[in-house]
Amino acid sequence: MIKTVSLTPETFEFADRKPNFSKWVQEQLIKDSLARCEDIHVTHPSGRVKGLCNGLHQNQCLQCYPDGPPTREEWRAFRTAMSSDIEAGDLQAQIRDRVEKRNARESRLEKNAKKRQKRGFMSKLFRN
Image (cartoon, rainbow, N blue to C red; front, side, top):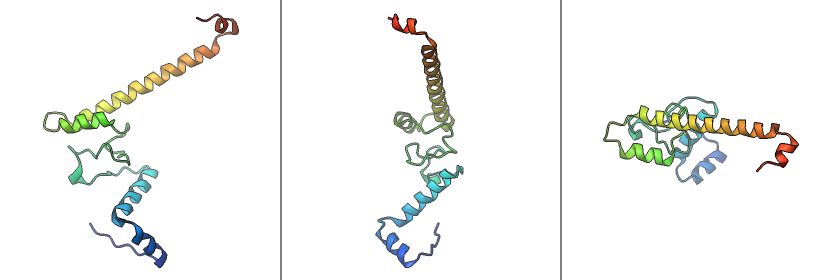
C-alpha cells in the first residue's frame, strides 16, 4: 500500500539521509502503536508463519505473543516443524508454559528470600 507524506524542507533532508525511509516510517508506526498498547501485527500477512508474526522481530506482536515472544530455540523449532502438525496455538502454549514456570520460579525465590530475611541473628550466625 502507498501513503503519501508531506514533509518540510528540514524533514525532507532528514528523510533523504535514511537508506530506506519507507521501512523506517513503518517501524516508527509500529513502535508508536506498541507504546500505546495497540494490538497490531508487526509482520505483513504474507510473511507470517501459520498466522503468527515473526517471533524474533525486534517489536513484539502483542496479538501473536500476548505472553511474550518465543525464544530463538522455540521459534526455530516451530519454523522447522512447519510441515508437521504443529499449530500456532502449540507455540503460544509453549511460550505460556515457559512464562508460567519462570513466574512460579521467581515467586518461589522471592518467598525463600523473605524467609531468610525473617531468620534471627543467631540462626544466621550458626547456619551451615
